[in-house]
Image (cartoon, rainbow, N blue to C red; front, side, top):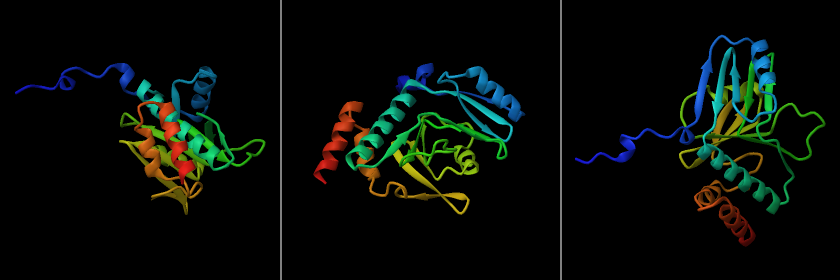
Length: 203
């Protein structure tokens, strides 16, 4: 019986997300670690009631989140929607003991001078494990969390203090997740955006 090569060759570090989970981290320590990291893009940090996750995303993870972001932004442009992107903006609340840095996040319309949270947080799940992002975002009162996992986009809408899964976004109800999924499978990011724009212009 032949054994597939993938079963005996471990994945390369660039193919999986690297995570470290620290326990018993105070809020002051969390803020100190954020300050030490400064403006660097990694590690991405998630804080939940004393638990701190440090995550260095893989190349595949970053490619997927960028492709999805480009598609969302192209959709907004084609439909004339004002959408402000804030990348991996650090959103945190000391009273709620939570902090998160989404893969991408957005505010609809012209944001306030000092917005405290995004309207939409985008998360790509490439390597399983880590803290519950939905629980973190629930405490931060982020209205919508979109999760891309296993070639599927799911929408989690904050309703009565908890997230409910819905087939579409409440904030961007005309965005077709099936069209987005088809475009995500294109051979390149550029082709994905071209395919999306063509489909929207024909509809």
